[in-house]
Image (cartoon, rainbow, N blue to C red; front, side):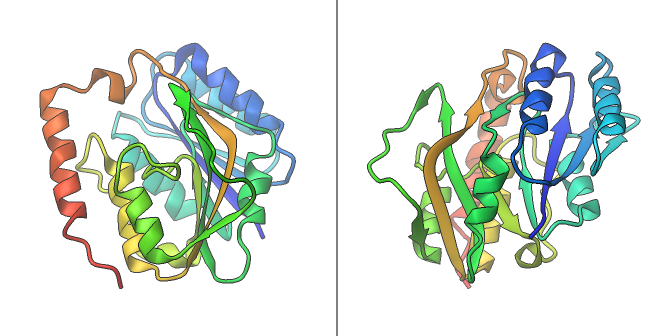
Length: 233
C-alpha cells in the first residue's frame, strides 16, 4: 500500500526545514507532493530543491497565492497513493508517522488518525490501536479539543473513499474540519486511531490560525453550522 503525503507551503521561513528533515527520516517509502502557494521568501525554492534531490518527490508552485485548499486540491488531484495524508509544512512529524498511518489500514478501515501535540498533549487514557465506527468518528471530528480532532494533518484517508470530495477553496479557516466531517459523513466504514504522539503542531506567529480576525471566526462558526447539517450515510 502506497501513502502519498501532500504538503502545502506558503511563506514558511525557517519553519519549513524541520518538516523537510522529518520527511527525509520516514521509515517507509512514500510519495511526496510539495505544493507551494505563491511564496516569495525562498520557501518555493527550498521545496523545489528538496524534490530534485529525493526520489518519489514532486514539486509544483502556483504563480500566485490561491490558498491552502487550492494547494491541497492540486495534490489530491495528482497523487497516486492508495491513501493520502495532508500535513502542514511548518509542523513536525515523527519518523514513524507514515508507517503508523499505513499500519492502521486493515481491511474495512477508510481513515486513520494518530495522536498530536498542539500547545499541550492531550492525556492518553488508552494505548494501542482503537477502532471507531462512523458515528463515534463523526463525534470526534466535529468538536474542538477531541483526541482525534477534525484536522486533516494527523490523518490519512483512503483515496477510493474520498471520491469526488474536495477542499472548499472559498474558506479561509476551518476548511479542514469541513473536509474531514464531510468524509466521515459519506463513509460508513471503520476508522482507526493510534494515540501515540506522532504529530507536533508548531505555533508559527504569522500562520492563518494566529492572524485570524473576527470575520474569520464568523466564517468558522458558519462552517460548523454547515457541519451540523450533515447526515451520516
